Length: 165
Image (cartoon, rainbow, N blue to C red; front, side, top):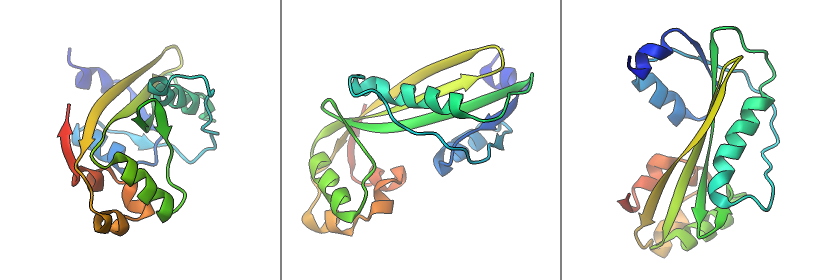
């Protein structure tokens, strides 16, 4: 039995504000409903290895979900991070920080790690997917044109992507 067929028996709840995650799930033809907004302090232990941060945060979000799951509900939470070397690059607070991050990524190889947690009333499974990305060298003009919001949009970043493994 295919995963798609197995998921049909669940009422899927997507707890994500990411338009990309909604688009991906919609493209599979799987029906879901969006969870309402809820608070989750996205903090992780400083000693946690960078590659483990995304799945940790995904599970944290799952446990912060404020509603009790129904018997046939499946909650999906996720978190995506960028890792350069052993450092997790946070979301930039302003355009200057966005340009600084882009300068560090320019011509460099980094990882994009997405952690996903699937949880029902009885079971929970968390996993991660890692992509290695190499950015082309960015000109000063390109760095200056990229705003705080544009950095957060994966499709925009793909414009400068040189290699994906």
